[in-house]
Image 1: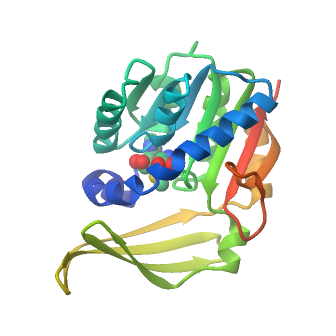
Image 2: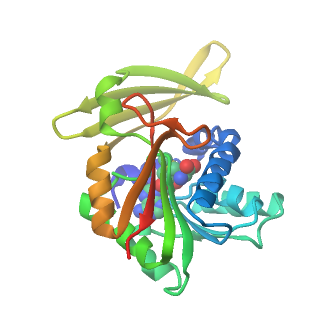
Image 3: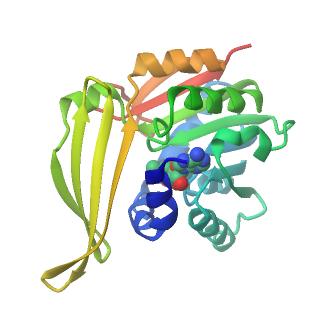
Length: 261
Ligand SMILES: C[S@@+](CC[C@H](N)C(=O)[O-])C[C@H]1O[C@@H](n2cnc3c(N)ncnc32)[C@H](O)[C@@H]1O
């Protein structure tokens, strides 16, 4: 496992959780948008596989809408939190959370699972090599029924990075200030980010930790051709799945793909 993956999602899961929790309020609209699109593609209800599920916002939202869902994430903290939230929200019978590495998907999920929907949300790709990403989507395809749908949602893409990288910024998450310093290398399509966390204490800030991570950012065409190799045909793109705003270089990438026979 990449060192930064362990640092940010396992060792300092407490810090990342504060940022991830802020995405929960927008999730119902996202999943409602996905469900409307699924109907357009003839998928009504069924089983969802949420890759890199974090603390379960997408899988739990699907479960609340009557789907059954399986979420997989390598962070024990996120998986424990997801299970606790599913219990609190009364959907623990509809959703299962597995702590494991999506690169070994076939060993984590029964081979006869037959999912109808696969999701990968919030730039959960580009962490490893391109061939490892390809393998994940190949394995997901093997676990999906004919006519199943894959969503890659809320994901950074190359055009948007080339247009607007903010070299440094800060945001406040509960009692923590996050200073973000970013370097975009258009030549290698790699985004290198350093996050420095500080505890707010009145007007003072006390340093907590610093983590640098580097991810590969796909262009739409590159991602679509990788998915094709994995058995998924890209059938639609949007800037936002809730509003169906069109995909442009200024928006996030939301991609809908269908299984190839
Ligand atoms: C940016 S977060 C997205 C979380 C979630 N999809 C969401 O939208 O809230 C990326 C997630 O990928 C998980 N992750 C990273 N590498 C993974 C791997 N190899 N297997 C499973 N999960 C992984 C991290 O633990 C983290 O929860």
